[in-house]
Amino acid sequence: MSGPAFQELRRVATAVAKLQGETVRDATVRSDLRGVRLEFESGLILLVALERDDEGRARLEVDVVAAPQDAVAKQQIEVRFD
Image 1 (cartoon, one colour):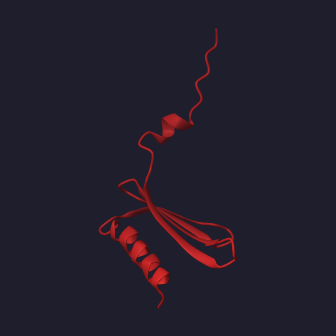
Image 2 (image 1 turned 45 degrees about the vertical axis):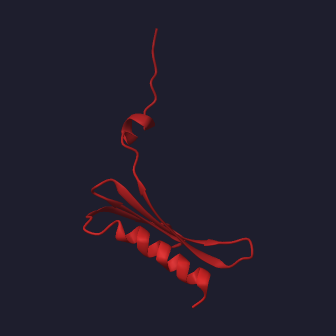
């Protein structure tokens, strides 16, 4: 196994390790099957996607992010009538 590939696996393992003991609340798969989104009860989100680099090689992207704390309020539009 080459150095960069090993480093990528280490990065993925570190990201997924943050989810130990979490409970999945929702799962979404892209229609082209190139991405998965798992939402957890704690508000963490696991994003897994298959992307292509500039040279056309497949690259696995894995990220663990926290959901916005007040997602509902940010999606609402306030309209005032005078």
